[in-house]
Amino acid sequence: MAARFLDFARVQRYRLSHAKSHMFQSFYRPFLASFVVAGALFNAGCEVEDPRFAAQTQYLGGIYGTAPTAGAPQDTVSYWDGDGIGGKPSVKISLGEQRAYFYKSGLLVGISQLSTGREGLNTSAGHFSIIQKDINHVSSEFGDYVDSAGNVVVPNIDVNKDPKPPGTHFKGAPMPYFMRIVGGVGMHAGYLPGYPASHGCIRMPEFMAENFFKSVSSGTPVTITN
Image (cartoon, rainbow, N blue to C red; front, side, top):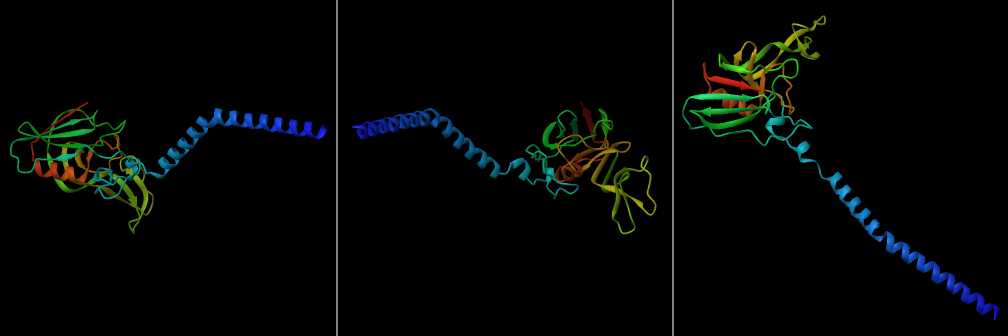
């Protein structure tokens, strides 16, 4: 009789334990499922490379548009449809939008992403015109101090402000397809990090600078607005 009572008590404890386990699983099953799904999505997100960082467009590149720049936004704006279209050229630049608009007789034929002057070296707004074209222009103010072997000793210098270390000489920064509009400021192919970063010039992707360069002439109007 005592043995039967012990067996009955053991069965009751088992049933109670099983019931509690079932209640626990039923209560937490939705949370566990959500956790598994979230974990799967997180792992998938980590494995898929962000397309902004994977892109290798000319816009993201350096002076000649060949090297990718991690972190810069992909250029989905720049295009050129001006070949074979005649008419008087003009350029309108929006500093706020960081874009240049190219027109022929009032018809929009191209748009370019830009990187204009950074804070403290802002590109000035106003009405200008092309006063010089130089396809292989090199800056006389900005560049690097290099040694006799051409190795960079001090990068990104301003010859008017930065002292030259002994045994070095100035090497100007290349500005291909340079189109001067006023003073030392002009449009040219250059590095575009996705925000204003120049010393005042108007940088654009190389393929856009090339198209602008071949389509403008001395006197072409350039309007810069904020």
